[in-house]
Image (cartoon, rainbow over all chains, first blue to last red; front, side, top):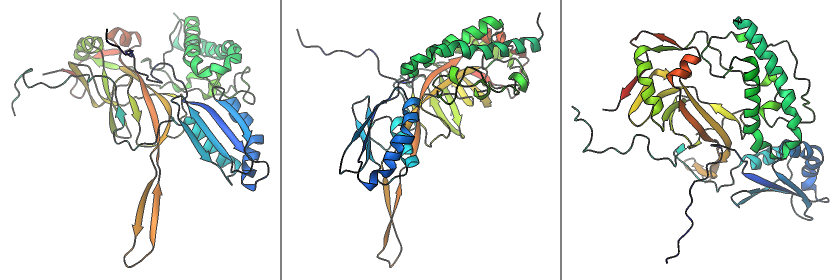
Length: 137
Length: 258
């Protein structure tokens, strides 16, 4: 009996039915002493509670990282992570970075030329020279 | 028989009362993204069954612009300061998307009406949707990365593409002139997020100069997923108030495959 792999019955198409945000966790790191964390500390006090309330599906962790620049790290369902350094940024700029991490898909950035990617078979089928009517040129 | 204005008043009353019943589900915020479609489904039948007049967003009946009362402020149960909207039920009525209003009922030619069952009955369908004058050939479940960042949309939003130049199945194609009336089909698309391209660096030089300038660009793009592509059957069109007219030269036609 040969070993048989598990066959997948469906392909994941997030959003076609239910929609799950790909970002599952955001880690906020800051330093209490360093000046580059000044904006980050204000952000954590002023903006983060509202941001966390708006996005209940994202786990949010805040932890100090002494003697280092402040950092936001996003963790995604596909297992990848995306760190963004936010040194010397203003709180509203940090909020923009947090929103960027929230809406990102977690995939590696790629240059894509075609706008539409489809898993479906061609609706009209593949053209065959042996079928159909003859057409005048 | 009610007059249309009386029904409209009744429907708007029902729409006003609907969010208060749904906001009792507010403690379930944790799984809001999963519950979004479910609460939508719960909310709509309530309003429809009570009004006995289905107010579907793409109904073909002519409705005036004053469908929604503008003088009212907002739903009393909704508190903007505490809760940010997660589902459509949380959005104040005044800010909810307005269903498109049409000045005249949908006009379908006799020949189109006779051929439409063939197209509607043959699945799957494809649609050539036009967005900023660019065609996108879409089927259900397709992933779209628009070549631009769409403003004012968030992940999880649902859009309807209402400009289609062609609509078809395996053997039939319906071509618009230049577009098909949006009341014949339904193409819903969900925004799934924002993507970026890798940073591109282009070196800019001038002649006889050592200086090299680096021009950087990193564009962002909106990601989407096609939720459904559906052609309405003649019965649905007639139920929504479509009018059958004689054939004209510039009307949409369904062409069988040759």
